[in-house]
Length: 202
Image 1: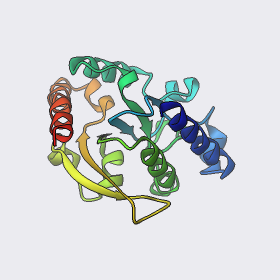
Image 2 (image 1 turned 45 degrees about the vertical axis):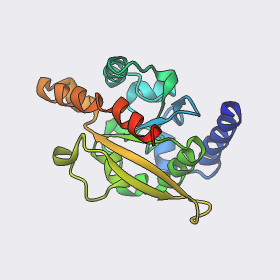
Image 3 (image 1 turned 120 degrees about the vertical axis):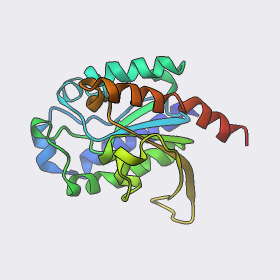
Image 4 (image 1 turned 135 degrees about the vertical axis):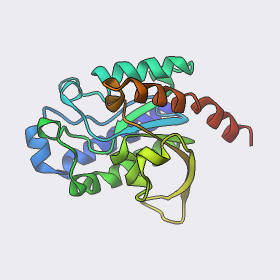
């Protein structure tokens, strides 16, 4: 099943290039950073956009934030091969600026298509940009670490629905320079196995 899903994901990545999504971003970026991990994963992590290291390597979360993410995964007995990691925006914004609303909107159908293929049980959104794509009214400072159940209508067939639990977290980058926030993020992260257990034991 996984190899079949991987082929479908590769097709979505090729489609982004063919559709010339955000041509200005594409022109200033080194390459598309689509996503990496287990196509059969129960958990998908979603960041906002690639940074410098991600742009160079073509993989999400490979810089300092990625190291911290690996540390947090290890704290709940997970490794990258267990999960899938992607960003909303798949090209690096110049000078690591925040992705613009139009850029996020342009990539959203492709992110939705990714999620439809993987069909995860839990979405861990990293940072407010990612969280607000699914929960527009969410305030990350108030709502971080609080799981919410949502239904995503399928892009191709709105009669089909993907039910997922979203866990909004601070972005690892925000915690790198703030010891208190780092602990908050670790604490929020520690809920992931319990959330998954709750869903799968139903």
